[in-house]
Structures are given as structure tokens and as C-alpha cells.
Amino acid sequence: MTVAKPLQRLLIGAACLLSLSNTQAQDQLLVNARVFTGDRLHPYAQAVAIHDDKIVAVGNQADIAARVATDAKVVDLQGRTLLPGLIDSHEHVVYGGTGLLSASVEPTITKVDQVVKVALKALQEGKSMRGDVLAVTNIPLGIWSQQSQLNARFNSGPFAKVPVVLHGMDGHTGWGNRVLRERAGITQAFLRGLTESQRKYYGSSKDLVPNGFTVDAGWDTLQSKVPLPDAAFMLEAGRAGVNLMHELGITSWLDALASPEILATYKALSDRNELKSHVAAFVQVKAEDVERGDPLAQVQALRQQYANVPGLTVPGIKIFMDGVVEYPSHSAAMSEPYKKTGTMGDLLFSPEQFAQVATQADKAGLVVHVHAIGDRAVHETLNGFAAVRQANGNSGLPDTITHLQFVKPTDIPRFKSLGVIASMQLFWAEAGPDTIDLIEPYVDPAIFPWQYPARSLLNAGALIAGASDWSVSTPNVFEAIYQAETRKGPKGVLNAGEDMPRETMLYAYTINAAQALSQQEHIGSIEPGKQADLTLVDRDVLTVNPEQLKATKVLGTMVGGEWVYRAEGAKL
Image (cartoon, one colour):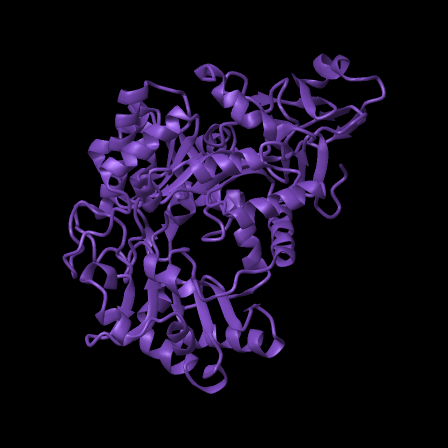
């Protein structure tokens, strides 16, 4: 039976909220607060009344006290700022949790010896092992240009007989030492047997001796020989990820790459009453799924399997339209060739394939969430959504393009006209090595100035949702808003005219992100009838200067009327 289109969003979001209420919970009255509601019609208030798991009134204490029981718990917030529960429209919480439990390097490192120090400590302690493979995560992209040092250090000494895998911080790149790449069959003979198009996913010398670097399809090949963590480890990782979200005031998120193992982990957390969040999990669809003719079969099966898991929905599909832009990857699809190679990156779906699967998904009531970094990938994704609208009309589903590192100026107005949400990781919008040194020498000079064009999108009427892509970057919302506002970095300011207003960014991480999760009817703002998801912070984030904003601390996080996190000393 076809669901009436105006009801689709309600049905997608409703299952996430089952069983989150506090049975017979004491009513609460939160008073003496600076409340930013996320409701554009009534953005500010002083008090919030809560009955069970729902907000029942917003305003001042005198006006709303009658909406709760006479024995309601009154909490004086002492003039601190109360926000809607923060929402991240693109991250990987369970996967990020595996990184919290693994050997990881600091994002500021620049030398291979610093990676070796972390890896050697993990090896000596017997930690961060995947079977017999030593895994080190969060490797900064600048390390990939130091191939001779990587091979000298990780193919000798204590690592000579130990398979070692290094995970790039971007999630698209990685490196394996000789033991691991030979196990994966990545040899000179293997590379000689590939086409030129296939070889570009593997780093090598001129005579095709592999150097260990891999990107996208090559990274998949290398990882195929790294054992997956077991269910117990995944549960611990999921628990660590959820706890970190709560510490940062994040109550809901879009998990942008929900494998069967990750979905099972969310269910395990939910079964133990440990999820206490709203998770919209998106299942990847690949081009080969379209070629087989059943691109949505697995998604629909998983959607049915997890239909009644409290705190979890499976509202749509995730598509990778391209790769990443930074040297040496150059797999993001660009409209002009990379200057030193003459290549233009890769469209992982042909325009026809993408339009086909997006149209089928829309008919099935599935949201489409697309990774697109290069300006050509963004352009073809928008063309695909235009084809969807022409074929199906406007379903009202919150289709989204995420990352948007480069966007053609002529494509910017199309976000509003097509109703496509821009999910942006503006923590990355700084003038630093990853946006200057690894990009500017390689991309066309006419394209380079259009890096993370947030203000241009905003001025053109696009709906912008806040996102982190954690564990690729920090999930700290206030550090991200600081970066969106200042665009400062060690090399100056990145495209200063693309800076974002602070209040806009607060909407981006609340009601706008809720829309990307297809749950704006239930979460994302402090309004009567919505879930009592709240974040209490230690300063007025609307008025402090940018440096003070960056240092904002979360004092308490509430989900469904329950404080799931309290900072030490917070009286809640």
C-alpha cells in the first residue's frame, strides 16, 4: 500500500521514539535559563516544562508552571544556556568508538616516527590488534607523502613479521606494510595485471612495486585481510561512542554507513537500554547493486529487521558519488583535471545509475544521502535529484548531499530549488595543510576558491545541516561552529567571505539536522509536544566571542526527560 506522502516523514521517525519515555517519571520545571529553542517563530524563552518524556510548555516560569504537577521537580539553571539536544547529520558513532578503543595518533602529527612511537607502544602492550594485524587509526593525510619512511620503519625491526595497517583520518585511505599487502595479494604482479584505471587506487613506484598506500577500492582490498572486530568489541565500541556523544551534548545523529555489524551493535545497545539516543542509520548502496537490478533489496530487508528497535530507524540509503580530493588520492570527481596528473577523479556511479537508484528509493519512501566532494560529483548528484523530481514529483523526503568541499557557483541555487539539504562538516573549513598544501597545487585555480562555500549556499536559500563525519574530525559542535564562523587556520583564513552566522549554525545543529534525519516532527527544537531532548552549556553561546565559544563545556544532556550525562559538579 502506498503511504500518503505528507505522512512519510512521520512514519520514518516514529519508531525511533518508542520506549524512550520515562514511565511515571516526576514532572520537571527547568527555570532561570537562557533558552534557545530552535523554533524560528519563538526562538528564546526562560523556562521549560516537561511531563514524562515530552516538553509540555515553553516560556517563563509563571506562565508555564501550571502545565506540570504541583510536585514537579524545579531545577534552577542559574542563567545558563539551554539548547535543544544537539544533532549531527553525518557521523559514524560505532566506528568512531572502535577508534577510541584502538591505538590512535593525534591529528597534529607530521612525522612517521610519531606514528611508529604509537604503533610500537600498542604492539608491546598487545592492544589494537585485529586478529594478528596491528591497527593504528587517525593517520593525518600528510603522512601519505612520506612513503619511503613508512616502508623503512614498518617493514623492519619489531614490525618485520607483523601485519600493520594504518587507517587514514579521512576514512578513504590507508596503508599496509609488506606483510599485510602480500597477504592481500597487492604485489607487483597484481598491479601489472590491472588496467590503468584500476591501478590508480594503489600507490607504487614507476615499475609498479607497491608502496603500501591505498585509496577507495584499493583500501577495500587491503582491509579485506584485516579481521573484523567481534561482537563484544563492537558493543564496547558502541557504548564508548554513545557516551562520548552524550558528553558533548549530542542526542541524535545520522549514522552514514550502517553495516549489518553496526546495526546489530545499535540493537544490542538498545536491548540493554544503553542507546538512549535517536539514530537514523543509512545503508550503503553500491553501483554493482544497481547493475544486479536489486539495489534496495538489502536495505528493505534491514529496514524490516530493525523496524521496532527503540532509538533506531533505517530511513534511507547512503551513496558514495566520488572519493577524496587531497594529494595523493585525487579520487574526488572534479570538473577540471588535477594539474599534475591530468586525471579528473572518479564518479563511482554513472549519472544514469544514480538517477535510477535515487528514483527507485524515492518511490519506496527512502531518503537518499550522498557523499560528494568534487564539484563534478555535486553537479551530477543534483542532476540525479532533478531527474527524481521530474519522475516522482516532490515527495518531501529530505534528500541530502554531504561534504560539499567544492561546488560550482552555478549549482549553488539548485539546492533550494530541488529541496536538497546541504550537510556540511565546517570544522574542516580552515586554512591549513589539508585545505592548502594538499589541494591548492593540484586543483584548477578557478575551482579552488569555492572550497566549503557555506555562506554562498546559505544566501541562496539552501538548508544547511551541521555535521562532523566523526571520527574523521571532532564531533565537538562548538569547535565546529567556531570554525564555521572564523574559518581560521595556521595558514590564515580560508575564503573569508564564506563565514557563517552563529545563530544559523545553531539551527544547523538542531532543527535543520533533525530534518536531515527525517525526525523534525519529534526532535530538533524545544517546543510543546516534542521529545524532551536538551543540552545545557556553561555560557551564552549566542553572545560570547568566538574563542570563548570554542571552549564551551556541556553541563548536562537530557534525552526523553532523563539526564543521560551530568558534568562533575552540575546540580541537575
